[in-house]
Length: 312
Image (tube, rainbow, N blue to C red; front, side):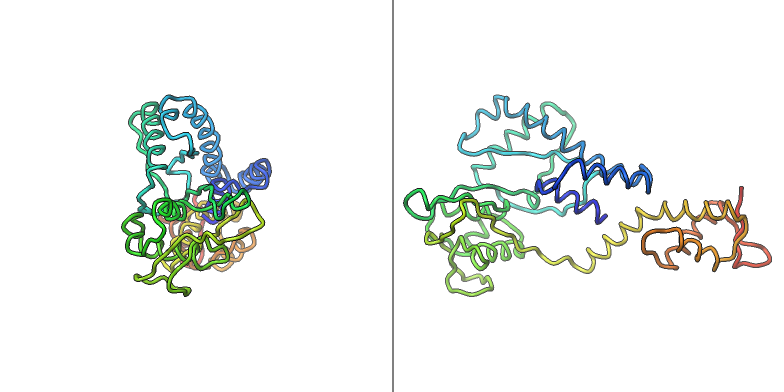
């Protein structure tokens, strides 16, 4: 689960140092853990390759040519089963992006009838051209998340916007909206000015475009503030990791018992700790042994319940 989450982030944000190195690592994982473990990882690469072909076809379509030439869209079509599960993220898209989204969706569904597209706003990022001062030196390219972009584009038509107006315009989750505004008005790169000043975002705050912003860089990355993972989310991820590994535990138990035929619980647990190359608890191992007994791979010795016999 952790490998999949990190790989997804690198692929979608184009931060992978080498695609060949990524595929080489997946090949090694396949040899070590089996094809069932790497099937989804390989599927993620296939999705990225197919997405490039889809975008090439879309760029030549009449639907794409009917959209505004001043903006472009790049879409990755992801197969649900291959990628990590992402929670729904409400957002009212700016018209500049909504037209592109609707055109692409119409194009894609005309080619793939019966499919359904669900837009993952939390994964999207944008490049925005901004002018802070008169003259060429005030023009910058801002690398922002889709959330940040939706807020910044409001200032094309208004000099000042208060918190409630921003909330109504973008329709974001309240917590996500507040940390996004913090990243724009309270971080190192302050594209917006906040009145009154302070690190916290309050309902009465008023925001304006900071046209006095200065930087020697022409391309500026505005970092997002990540919401902390909840205990429940962390436990869910950890449980998902063990679910992926349980087949390896089962295989190790059967391999040991097939060779030894009869073994005590203590010795079997000891052998498993030697063979398994990832952290696991005795309680988890006991659950897998019980599962194998239920499926009649093993049985408890009639004279000694703490000893297991292999069933051929």
